[in-house]
Each structure stands twice: as structure tokens, then as C-alpha cells.
Image 1: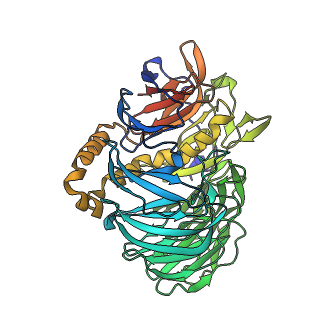
Image 2 (image 1 turned 135 degrees about the vertical axis):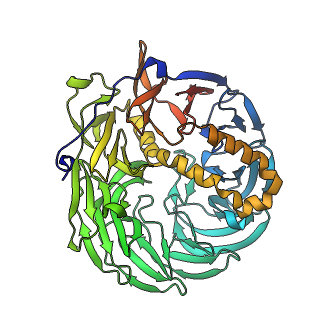
Length: 568
């Protein structure tokens, strides 16, 4: 067995970034009003909202591309993109007692409405594109709050024409949107998994499981049961459809439901905690128990126990084996069929579970992780000492907070990248060795939640863009025909021009640039583990957005100034 399975390994990485690779300011733009929010679109342009407008800026120069003064006081949660299309859906919610929504389908390139509809009832909670049927499913409610009755409507993507409507009568638990303010509270469905589409049906797992015919919107069947996982978001796994069975999880149980009738074939025992991930591989259902979740009440991330992995027979629901050896943290599962293992990480180790186990699960390997160096530290190299994954602590609001691994992402070439709030490493499952590892000091509590969100989303950006770019044969593209040509050309140029797309992970840490020090962004090369690009911010608690594809960073400076940086 490779020595790395029993002993810690770490590669020393440079604690400072070469000045030649330091970021440069591209532009600065002062607006006439305070910047409420800004966001990088999937085309790389910068969307900006003030009280009186939504506008779009060129990311290279900062010059305005378009501005809509009729779109006022638009919250970030009310703006959604449809990747693979030029559409930006802007929901303008009006009224409180008789709430209604005007939906603008804005062209990302021109800022003009492709279409507009006032057909929707209530306020919008979520949208879900069904590309090959050329429509977007909108989910609304006329009484937003902790629990609500929902309405479903399918709108044609190319015209906004209503295709069908359907009620969702079973009251559904809503969650506070993460971008919601403390005084103006916005509720949405972010605590649930998104709808699942299998080519003929839509499955909504908001209050049990509901199957709708995707063509007509007719309710085929429903099986109602409590799915509430306390205050945490996405504590239940996405449904899995396999042949004649739909597998769901809710409140610690896995259910097998007949695809044709909606009747429960079996329900597993209660595993005592959230089954937040399910994978059906090789005739076995693997479920991950517990993890780090967003708590809607505390508006922060927290660890939910018990932690572990369970293997279940998909024909009977009987537990084949259960693993509960994860300590004080657990990431998502990464099933590795070639290695016959399930890879997870806990607070201090990378753990491979033997897929051939029965009864009592066996660890195929356990790799202890140490970090001998870090970036953003006052001292480096010999003065730092050793830090275990999850063992580094940062000061936080009068106390101390412990970092922990959050997610595992598969990388091209067979490696897996494990990310924490401020930890990052690459692991080779075939060789069972750590390729590189890195710890980045957090500049302050405000940056930690941002880094955590980035850890779960940034590394999947390129994959999502690739999938969206492959929608050229969808119903939308066929229906849009010539009108999508400009968008396709723009998207293709952006993708082809993005050297090293998906290759970098950007983390907020302490940065030294010349004689100046402060909070900043460091780009870590995921192939080498080298922190070889950076940009220094002047703000103590920066509001920033990163375009992972091009290596640009956009920061709100003060109340009404935006600054664009290049970090490559």
C-alpha cells in the first residue's frame, strides 16, 4: 500500500505571488446611485442594479452596454439567467395583498425586452428552463411566507406565450433567500432541490413528490409526506429516476416510488439525519448523511449530524452497510467505480469506502492531510507549523470558528479537488496520494461565508457553461432560429477565448502587493496548486464577484463605485 494512505503528505507552495503576476486595475466606474448588487452574467458581462435601474457594463472597459431605467428596485433574487439563451428574466413584483408579477425577458446583449408578460399570479419563487420543449417553468405564490400554496405556469421561451398552468395545492415550506435583506425579506424555494425533468415528466419534491406531465402540465400523481429538514436548506437529496422507480429522500428516509402509479414500494428505516445526496451506481443506492448546510434561521452555515454514508438495496430498501466514521465534518460523496470506492473527506482525513463491503463497511484507504505552509499568513515556512484539514481556526466575532472541508469536485485527468472555506487540495484516488495542498488565511469573518459559497460553486462553473453551450439543438434554439445567432457567436467567442477555463479557484485571503497589505483575491492553479495570480483590494469587507472563466474580478468600492481588475 502506498505510504500516503497512513501518513500525511503536503507539498510546500509559495506564500507570496510573483509581482509580475499580480492583478492590475482595468477600470473604475462611478455611478449616479448606490450599487445595490452586481453580478457576472454567463456571457461575462457585468449586471449592476441601483434603486432606479438595471444596467450592464462591458467587463473589459467598464463602459455601459445598456441601461433600463424602467426596472426599479429589482432585488438580486428577482433576476435569473437562462444559460444557453440570451434571456435574462427580470421579475418585477407589485403589490402585497393582491401581489402580481410582471416578467421581462431581457436580451442580455441589447437590454431590450424579447417579450414581457403580466400573466403570472403572485410573486415568483423559482424558474426552471425546459430547453427541448422551449419553455420555462415559473413557480409563484400569492401569499409568500414560511409556508405557501404554489402555482405553476409554463411560458414559451421565445415569446412568453402561456402554454399551460397548474396548481400545486399542497402547502410548501419556503426559505429566506440568501441574498435577501434583513428588513425586506424574500422567500423562495432554495431550501428544496430544483425540479427534475426526465424527458416526459417534471418531478417536484416540495411536499412529498409530485409528477406532472411536461407537455400538458397535468398532475399525473402525487405522494404527499413531510420533507421538512428543520431550518436547513437542501437537506434532502435530488430525486433519482431509474426505469420504473423514482427514489426520493426526506427527513432521514429513502423511498422507492412506482413511476406509473406514485405508490410507495418501500421506505427505508430512519437513518437519523438528513440524506442530502443519493447516487445509484452498480445496482446500489449510496446516501450521504449530514454535512454543512445553510441554516435559514441563523443565516449562516452549520454542520448537521449524524455524519456518514449508507448503502441500500434498491429493490428492498434494506441497508447493506453503514459508515459512521466521519469525524466533525463530511463532504459530498464522489463515487469512484474504477477504484471500487466512495470518496469522502472529514475534518482531518480523506476516506475511501470499499464498495464491495457488506454488513460492516471497510475503509479502502484513509489519508491524513497536513498543511505545512499557507498564504496570507504573517509568517511562512518554518514559522508556521502544521495544520490539519479543519484544524486551522480564525477569529470570528469574539470567538473562534473551525474550518472544515465542504465539497469534493472531480477534475479532468482523474484528480479530485477538496475545498473548505480556506483550505484547498488535490487528491489522486488511483495513487491514493495528495498531489498538492494549500491553506489560505481568511482576512476576516465577512469573507468566510463568501468563500464557502464559492467553494461549492466556482469549480463547477466551466462544466455548467459547457453544458449550456451544448444546447444548440434544443427546442429553444430551433424555435429562436436566426435571432439566436448573435448570442451564439458571442458565447462561442467568450468560451474559446477563455484560456484555462475552469483551471483556477479564487479565494479571499490576505494579500501583500509591494508595500501594501490587505484583503484580496488569490487565484490557485488547480493543476499545480500554485497561487500564481492575485489582486489587492482596498476595502476591509469587499463586495466582489469573480469571473472564473476569464480571471476578472469586480469590486464595489464605497457606495457607488465599481472597479474591474484582471488577475491573469
